[in-house]
Amino acid sequence: MNILIRADSSSTIGTGHIMRDLVLAKQFENSKIIFAVQDLAGNINYKITEAGYNLEILKSANIGELEALVKEKNIDMLVIDHYDIDFEFEKRLKQQNPALKIFVLDDTYEKHHCDILLNHNIYAKKSKYKELVPSSCEVRCGSKQTLLRDEFHKEKAKAIPKTKSKNIKIFIAMGGADTQNLNPKILKILKNFEHVKAVVVTTSANKNLEDLKEYAKEKKWIKLYINSEKIAKLMRKSDFGIITPSVSANEAYFMKLPFIAIKTADNQNYMHKFLKKNGFGVMGRFSKKKLNSMVKEMIKK
Image (cartoon, rainbow, N blue to C red; front, side):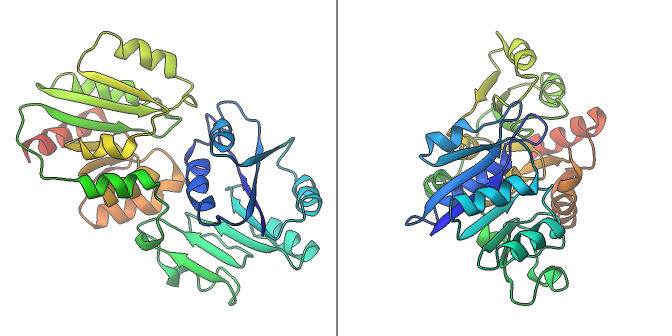
């Protein structure tokens, strides 16, 4: 089977789409897989080639260019993981290519014209898609469908009860791009707490990376990890996390890592509501005062 995965990453989009698509791609071991991406500022397209997949660089997000690629590469299934590709776009692709199977990843209960729909988030409910997709569509939802890298399964198997230590290790992940530049703001709050060790994960897609490096410089209580391949291990060795209600929440939930989640984008609304309803510490937006109070509570536990 020839599979084309359409997704993007950048300093504004973030890195989550590409990272989860790389996990999904492993489910199609005997297929020829091609990624169709744009060359946007702060992208992580190198991750695709590192994983051994073919890469096609698109000049635009235009439907015509994608259609031409589908025909040129004789694509059997198109995987769409892109917020700017909507129902009408998908419908046109299907009309122009009736034999093409369309597999869509969705996070926000949008209407789709597809054959398979995956919402891999822990909050996702299949019933919500009843009126949003064709009746013939196969809908995959919830925590059993969560796309997790192999490292998470391996590290969870190693999990042992933590021994009491005066040091509190806090895992911080504000998304690969940290679009609101919250990492330094969080660290400035944590510096006022005794015995705190901060583990900060980010990527080269973070446009404020140099400022973050400068802030962390010569501060022994801060460890900065850029483009880390050991996220699961870092989570396992931490006492709690400060994360966004996004892919990181799926991962922390799986690893049973207690966390505070700070919403940074509208596409995190459903995860934010789910976490709040289920008793997790959440913030609708960043607040110094509220985060300070929530960290105090987490340290007491």
